[in-house]
Image (cartoon, rainbow, N blue to C red; front, side, top):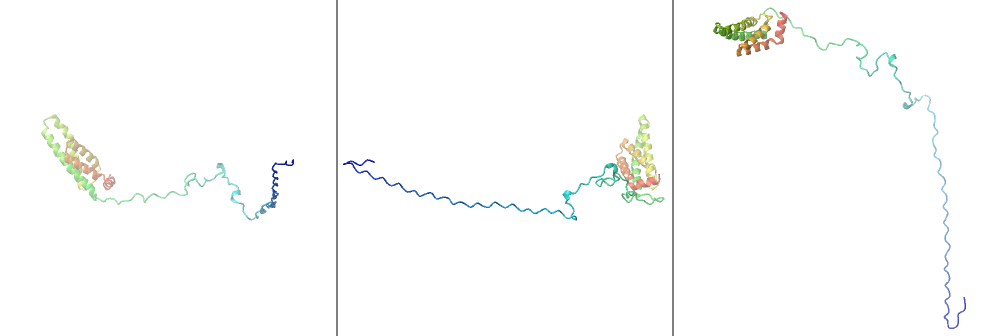
Length: 212
C-alpha cells in the first residue's frame, strides 16, 4: 500500500477480519443393535392316541347304487320297501245299526208319506175336475195320465203313513211331483218337494234298503 502524501488524509486502517469459531462437529449416534430373530416353538408331533383333526378326516363316499340293499336314509320309508305291517284302519269303520222290526218304521218315513198323501190328493182333485169338465173334448183325455200318477202317489202315501215299506215310493214321489208341475198345482208341488226332502234322510234310506 503506498504511503500517504502530505496533505492527504491518513487512510483508515482496515478492520480486522472477524474470527469465526469453527463449526461444532456432530456427536456420532451409537448404532442400535439389530433386532433379534423371533423365537418360534419347535413343532412337536401329536401323540399317537390323539385323533387327527376333523379337517384331516377322509371323506366317506356312499356305495354305488348297484350295491345298495336299502334306500338312503333321506328317502321316505314308504318308497322302495314294502310296509312292515298293514296300516291301521283310518276310523272305527261303518257303524252297525240294529234292524228295524216289523211295523217299526222311522218317523221321517211316515212324515214323508203324509206329505206325499196330501200333495197327491190335491193333484188328484184338480185333475179330476179338469177331466170331468173337458171329458166331451179331446183335450180332456190328455189329463188322464196325470190323474193316474196322482192316484199312484196317493196310494203310496197312504201306505207310507201307516208305516208299510213301499219299495217304489221314491219313484212315485218323483212322478207325482211331475204331475203337480204339469197341473200347475202349487200346493201339490210344495208337498211333493217336502216329501222328497224327507225321503232323502239317511234313516229313511236305510229303512228302504233293508226292505228292498
